[in-house]
Length: 130
Image 1 (tube, rainbow, N blue to C red):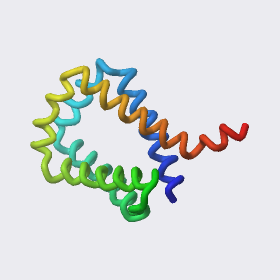
Image 2: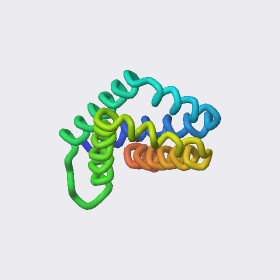
Image 3: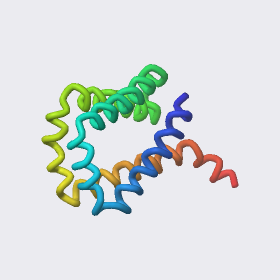
């Protein structure tokens, strides 16, 4: 199950990281649009919460090694979904961070690095065998 979630998160984080880095100028508009629409924030929170719940229910593995990274990511995803739904005002107040290009670059690089790390865990052995 660890490889399954590593594959999903690897693809998701890699694409999201690249999307943020390639579209840095648009990220503030995306955040502004999201936080300005209460219904969109709520639905986004529900999807984030659903992903977190699935990850926690199917991958709550607290052993040393790389699988714990997926478990922690699952719990953080679940928490993020709860925050979006229960504390939307706080999420709106945090949007100012995205006004700084440096924060978007950090978030994009963070997602990209973790995405590539997960993809390496899943496909690295196959690539090395070629």
